[in-house]
Image 1 (cartoon, rainbow, N blue to C red):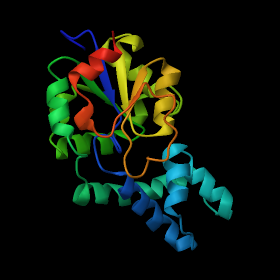
Image 2: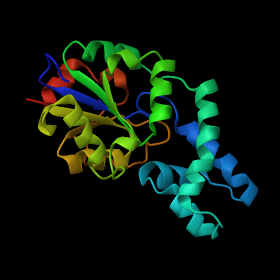
Image 3: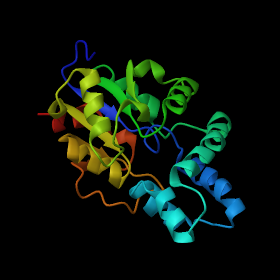
Image 4: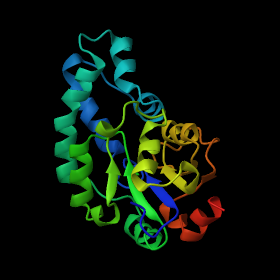
Length: 219
């Protein structure tokens, strides 16, 4: 699937390509409201974004009469509505993708489900950059396990060592590390306090993710 390219770039979706972390926060806040539970931004950043186990954390903390996966299911339609009405691209996404697409095979690998992934790529007009994508239904174990990125490398028909992952969270960086793939961290307002020491490189924004930077990591 990589075609003429011998190297690949694997993008996370939420917080890297689309400005969605705040939308997730609002959706979960709405779901938890009937239970009288409020999640602080600090809790959300740590347990939902950095660790990826927010529903498990909040159910246990407040002894809620609902399973974590049920909480995720309740969140889904609320989040989809927010996606349809308020989602936007992160800064420099289109310019960066256009530059990289001339030299690398590109894909997206996300913990987001297929419905949300396909919708938002089309809605934002960037689906043309990604002939193959990896959604949550395509692999068994969620980040920080390596399954998402290993699946992405297989879909690109490239070995992991010929790919670079672009992530914004601790769990995403660790998924790349566990997959044996170099990782560039691009933090956003919700992930600035994540631990990025395992990343190969930390950038201030996608504007710094040039073809030369990616090529330098794959020498």
